[in-house]
Length: 270
Image 1 (cartoon, one colour):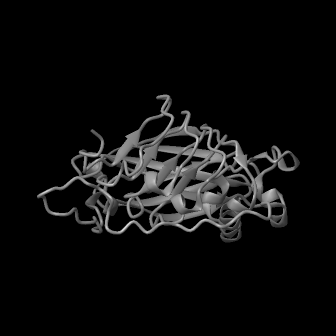
Image 2 (tube, helix red, strand yellow; image 1 turned 135 degrees about the vertical axis):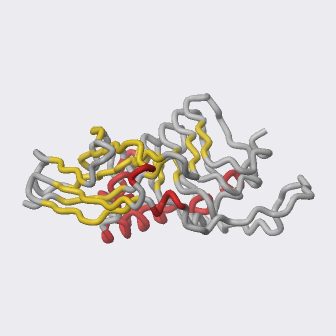
Image 3 (cartoon, one colour; image 1 turned 90 degrees about the vertical axis):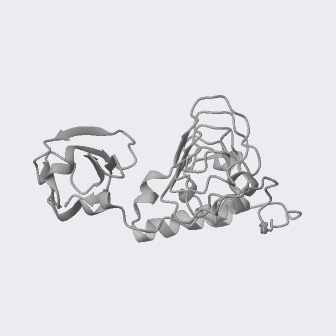
């Protein structure tokens, strides 16, 4: 049923009790951007299961499952992935997870927003239990001498046995009219206050604004509704010398998108 939904963009299967994603399940879902399978009983995530999503997937949430090993081949080919939620996975931290260690370290150096939102905690081995992945030395991520590095597959041509007379789907590369409506103009930071200013090209298309924010790594969101006529927002009483994530949901009318949600990380001054 899902394979036939070729224009599907969002698929949420949280808490449904699924134990496994069938191989090549998403090969026809070439527009799928958001896949949420948190709070289930998944034990693995393979490149066969993720096949078809490498050029479209933006957000993947596999948190609160029973996955102990994150297969590099399943995740290293995504070209548009912006967010990976892996909270509360019982990760086994050995040499097979060094790719994730290196990626997170690169995000940390770049001060990338994803570094603050991806929580990788080791469960095993016992020597690394309950430790944040980046808090351990890379040399501690060891495998036994018999381990042979895995080679990723190259699935060409596509493995599907399903034939179709319809034309192939073309990737969407045009900028949406909705994305042209809103843009941030200025962000000002002080020791305890952040002020946002924005530009709107067509105010009549705005239904409302909702500003969500969190102190990074607390994972506790706060929401404030902002008047639809506003062109700025100021948040006071923030903690000094701290990183915050702010996301402004802009609800729109009569456009190809019902909303847009730009996010930025800000740092209050000391």
